[in-house]
Image 1 (cartoon, one colour):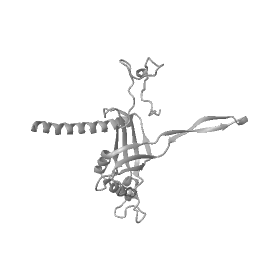
Image 2 (cartoon, helix red, strand yellow; image 1 turned 30 degrees about the vertical axis):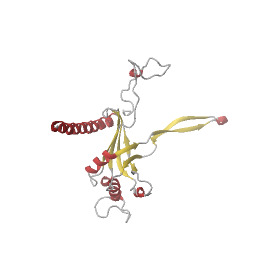
Image 3 (cartoon, one colour; image 1 turned 90 degrees about the vertical axis):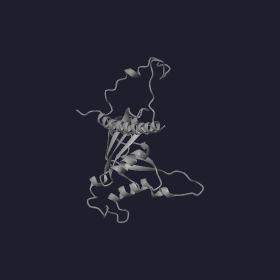
Amino acid sequence: MAINPFVNGLGFSKYNYPDSMRGMFGGEKFFMDPYTSGYHFMYFFPPDTIGNEVGQFLTTVCQAVTIPGITVQPIEYNGLNDMKWYVPGITNLERNTVDCTFVEYAGLPITQIMGRWVTIFRNILYGISDPSAQNTYSQGAYKGKAVYATTLPDGLTVQFAAVFTGVFPTKIPTDLFESNRAQQEKKEIQISFQFDQMLTGTAAESYAASLVAATRNQAISTSDSIYAVETSSN
């Protein structure tokens, strides 16, 4: 029997707020925490031809993520007198892309990464896979993986997670380099990554939780060690 990835033993007893007339979510004893956006992690695992360091860098500098929704396509039936009724049809992703926003830095690391990644499967000069390497036409050479997770403000408790397979970028952001002498602003790049499947559910959340916990612990331990050195020096 298939497991429904959106039903993970959800119980509504904790949402049984007694003051349903006013619909309030806070109080001395009963409260419901709102879901807050802005606390996310996006882990990139590019193909071996790109390297783990690139994935770690993209993970660090990813500013925003937009993932697709899942839509039910209803089927329409027609009767006499133009009467209509509907039954649910197929359920599918609205699109097979995930959009990520990055801040570009001096030295243009984001542009170079995307240019290198795209060139693996489509050299912009010759229209073929990278002529300087072998077997780059294989999907394993240019497709990677990504793991997305949103958390509570503690930066640890995963609320939603998705694993994207068959990931590759669809743009080299050369259009970023327009310029206006009257404006000196940072440049943010939005890259759409194509993917084959978006996997959710308990397994995805557990996988993401292990990555998030490792990231959080490493960041906190690094900061603590820096403050410890400064404290001891004083």
